[in-house]
Image (cartoon, rainbow, N blue to C red; front, side, top):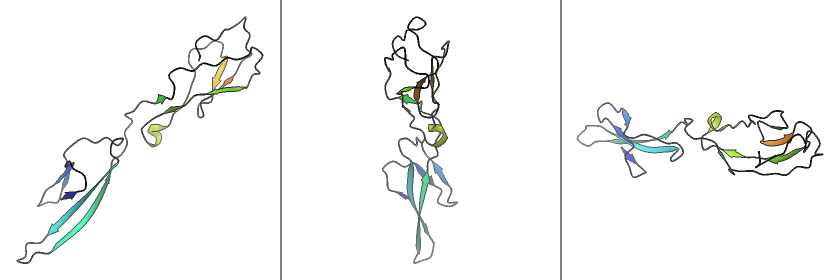
Length: 140
């Protein structure tokens, strides 16, 4: 068995043809492996056949979402209308497919002055703001 990359991630049993792994895999580091396998008959003048196998590493949910910024700050006027979107936050996840899908939410807020679109990350005014009722400190 011949491979295009340097370390032997797979071995093959010469008699059964069973391919086994020799290491752990991380899809975020290498998504696929290509190996070439040869089959040789035992004749006095042996004939050889070669096939190429591409192995794709499936994703597991092993990465946390990461916000583009660790802190956001935005100043609103107290007469900002309910429904006004004013800030979009973004997080990314190195996983793939459903493992990389992100849902946004705001926690521990009474009353709910702000809401966030769970899909887009846009934050919007959900309740009339009054500086006598609430003062935004240190961002969201």
